Image (cartoon, rainbow, N blue to C red; front, side):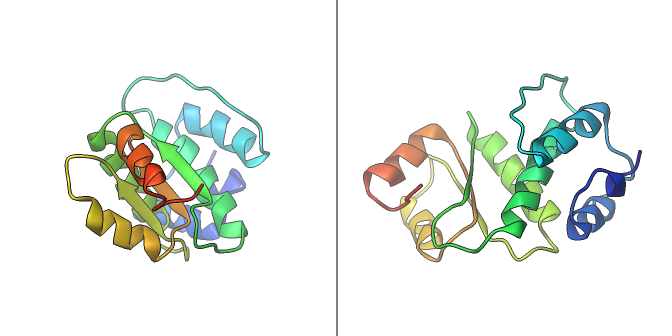
Length: 143
């Protein structure tokens, strides 16, 4: 199966091909159609099997179909800043041909640049739990 047969927007398929992928992994082939249909899903697979794309591509697909908002319409919570940065980087790469705005927030760095980014408006927020709670407590992000 090819990515263009999964039901993803052409812009996403183009970004995936630009990233060097031609065929989905087994977890992607099984997960993407289910999540595009709005079904809930829990998936377990080894590192390097494409889990990030399996949830991120359908998320970007659905966000691209919606109306922009000043507040995040999608939220991905990760346990570590390294994983948040990785997911944020993949969101930028896969969303390269879409008009979506994303931000990554995590602790260990200043809050002010993150606050400025949140104020400009975003569609997708990738965050670690502690820093997300910090911004929520200060009313700098609204979910």
